Length: 553
Image (tube, rainbow, N blue to C red; front, side):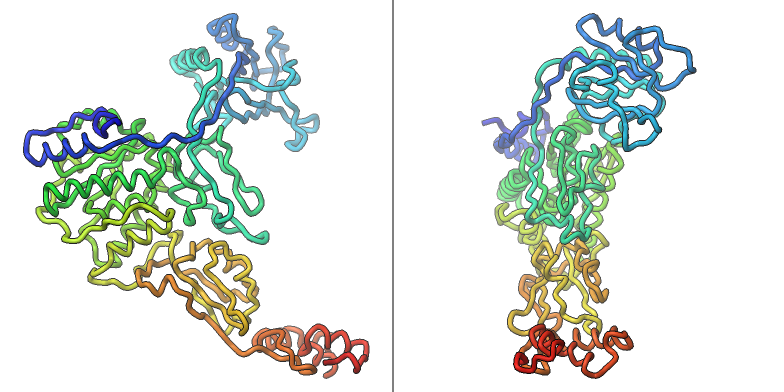
């Protein structure tokens, strides 16, 4: 089995005893991420060249006879095009991925709803292009991370040459990992037509995620493994699988344990980076990394979620640096900043300001860091299990145990933990919120009208607040480490209202009072007899309406 340092190709300094111990522990730590399923692309030789006719013919010649090129000219005058494979294409739109790109033009009336497929117009039977080279000033695919097979080169000849070289290499069948796993049963995107959590859609830099009713759908061919969606998901409905976070957490647990056994309770600094955006930088500085710094390689820096970072803190890390280079997409950077802000809020609210999670584009602050001579006496030893929220809550509870302020810590909006605050005067116990809660945080009271709440289940999606007809619920993001947060507590309870005719319980007093108030003065309820029907159960109401006294009760 490959050791961690060998897999990373890092040459860490081992000049001192602490350096040698770090080198031995990391060299001996097994590193063999479990394989995941794959996604296959099949690309042939059809290339869409979005450029003027002259440059298009030059690019066609550079690609060679093995490629079938089609030139889409989006600008220019009304003069006809000379090349038989060129087509005037104002209003061109392109979408898709390697092997399955579609291009379309506005319909005869210029509308977007009746767009016409350019591939069919150019005589391609299935209408699909395998590759796109776009020399336009404006990109046709706006995602921060472009799909494989799409090359925006603008007016740069060097980038055009690179794109031509890439197209030559991308003919055949190719596989990449399927980076994610989605569980719709615990997704908080929506319920009963009410919009809830959209954090994954907002965080995705490839535009691979779309809303499909009350769930989301991830296109595995557009997904490039950025991972921000999994980091931001509050319920754990979408998880990163390359590698699974449980493997990373277990790796950190063992490394921190082994270092602690051999070096004593010293604080560890964790440097988290990915190979694409930080691999070369970290490798070049490996000999300079201080002995208390542990480099942690992840597939994509955006996949780093709060559960991994908080577990690292619980296992003994004091400082965590996320190496986020300038070229990292803004959506990914924003997701990481929000994750760090959430963790800092918990730490600060619990008086644990000596721990930190920070982003850095440079390694300078890591190289200049100085370790704490003595670390915490007690660190966590629990294994990674139970999913995202379970790991996160266990680690947070360990961190705040015995802290100066162990009560609920206020959190920024959008955090994955919190409570709901009920306006009991406004609430009628209609239970509309219970029926839509995706995390089963809100519960009905059973035989008596009551609304109960389990705080640890609440993902702060906001569906309940939008479902409440009385606007009686508001979100309050916070983290409560107490065991009481895992138990049901009553938000409101009252005696049931009983039918004035038969005595059967059928509603709550507040609900009947609110209904009487709202219907006061309505022409259908002008007489005392009409108003009394509102206080009857449905059976007695029908009987009274048809003057069937024998049916009442």
